[in-house]
Length: 325
Image (cartoon, rainbow, N blue to C red; front, side, top):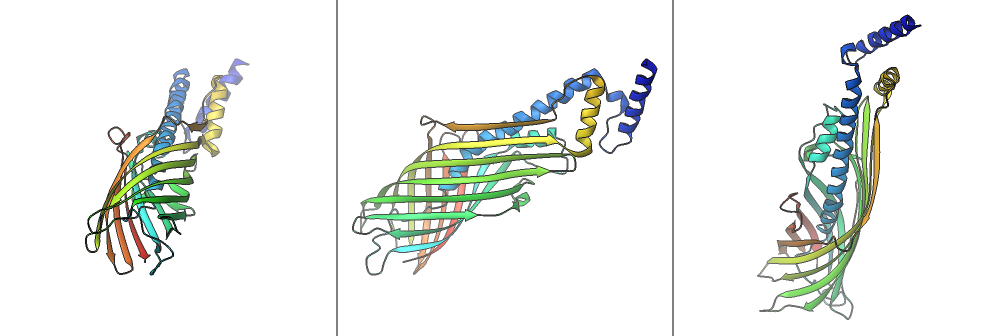
């Protein structure tokens, strides 16, 4: 009986040694299980860190999308009426060292992940002036469909959705000397997927983030140039999940080897976070400049997260091109 079991093990190791995903027979030892499970923990820890980074970065990326240089655009019912709309493109710098760790531990050698990544957001928005009271209202939307982000620092397949709105009330409408000063509130909903896959492994990170914020903004127009600066305070609720698994022939080999050794191995992992904390406020400062030529409005802005800028390098930049009256 022992001889049959021995011959079976030899045959198994011979089979594994001829497979494209195989380990060498001399590598299959009890220590292999410990190393394999340690690697699985490294994968899970990396995805967990990346999920937490998304919980901070996604709200910032969203609120960067409906920035107008004028702190208040004026009344809708006027001559001319005050409204406008256009397109925005923004990038938020995010720490992806955890994702890099997970991908390398999965041994997805053909997936190039850097330690930082520029999270892209693209939206179309529309802002209209208020009626009777001095306020304005904006809505912004974006849906990408599945796309690759290799040009932004990571070989990922992503699918992103953004829907948001805000309202601002003018404390000072501005004039020849005085700047415009407004206060406002807004809400954004973001959801998306980051995915990687190969012939023998796959992984996904999904996020759903609700963001609420209060802000104050000051702007002053000089001829056709309008510099501005503002402050925001964000609170967000993140429902993020991640999962990974070995698949195909590689997963079959893992199961076979583990069964032969009589050991349990970690060949997959998953986790779900559901976080909301009013104490976890993300304070932001944003600033930029708008250039207006008749009905054409071009705005450049930058945002820094004061809570995460020193450790995670969380900052954003955006550009907007709009037609406005």
